[in-house]
Length: 633
Ligand code: ADP
Image (cartoon, rainbow, N blue to C red):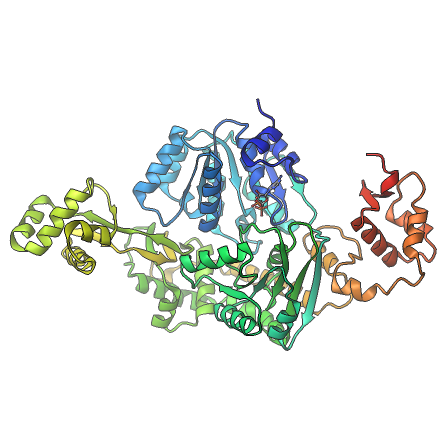
């Protein structure tokens, strides 16, 4: 049997595992439930992809972002591995086809978006799959204490019971100790192997800057390399990209309001380095695999430290020197202070939004659950005179309550299905030559169009039948109105999966105690962010690491606070003194070294040790510092 190393080489062409990957993979191969915390870009995917190629069966991967799943599937396919994904934009027959293939053992990997786990058909098929491993990507989404809670993740524990022998691997880049504990509990992980890679990123210079001239400050900080500037709104990304362009910096904007094609083009140009600067909303970055990003700037303060650190961590994944700059001013502080009120609206407002959704989607009180609808937030808010940010918060809270799932933007092709009986069709053919012609043509072109919706392209139909595309569309719309066919035009946009039986807004049960607990937690989180912004005396890395429950030294040497503290070395040649003390053949701890170096200046000694390590003159092994020349490999 192949070793993990051989598999890594054979499929991915890599020579060795990254720190911690190997241990994680071993735990999974041994059949243990595993929790892995690795920073963004740490190589989490391989932690479940390699083991399944050594174990038997299918790897079920739960992942929240459709675009990411599609990328992963394409990547695996290009490596000669068989993989598929199931998400909410797909038609039922496509889903069934993928599920039955999974039951047949045709896939090594099946990616599923969380709301799909809810559906009955998923559970029915899942029971019959040979599952070797369940991987939960972005596992913090399972915890309501995390920053991106998705209630559908809770289904994973139930799904697990249908395949009790398969171990679970939960992966995340950001989880506070509280959230880590919750992940273990919610996924019912027993005696889990837990791996945490330190969050410290020595090659990133972290700075936070008060700025009254953000565009100018951004401009000043952009070097030659690739950069991302995170903005809070779509409009801002465009304004900033324009401003930078006018000042000679090649930049593009990226946000969810662009079409898929525009986004793909912008991303491709940035990946190639043709457009070095991307002014983007947080829609950009997840799953983007670019190691040489030299600067990540935050044009506005993110809402919490989790988001900030995850985004900042996209800089310098190649290990080379990079910068993470956060710009803020009074406006940011005010926004953070007001955000709780905006994001946790009161109960009466939740009911109002619920009623508006039911009216918007025209869901009658008796409607059956689990139906998909297109959902355009902007149109919804305009029609019901709701303020978008607040309305979206209410939608999210009600989503947490399990009422519905809002999904990303997905493309759904046009479909047609015949629903009228044959004799009705015959009648139309006799009385309406134009529609009759269209009916005959469709029946000829798409077999099975009575049993299930056929995916069609109007221009193809038009070409084959010598018609104009507009006439085909008009004809289909007429047939739809006559209830002869069900015709849905191609669409792109977010969707809503309405889970429950609709009730009267007044009867809606709302867990107020839980909501006020979440409210409080949000307040704490924004307070942590505010004190991170206002802090001028404590090492930034220390603040962040402590937030994630890690121990951290008081001096990182690569943040603005440490830099401002580290005066130029007072003793000329302190570096030489450090080297001299380290001449002894055994390694020393930092404390021993500080004791031994005249002046006992811990901050300065630490800084020199870091620089010496960068210069490869000293090594840090097992908590001890060694002169490279003295450390026997
Ligand atoms: P994460 O999900 O942790 O952000 P990914 O799994 O997407 O990270 O991996 C980031 C990139 O690093 C991918 O291109 C992946 O192929 C690459 N990678 C992962 N492990 C290794 C390795 N051992 N050697 C070289 N490249 C690796």
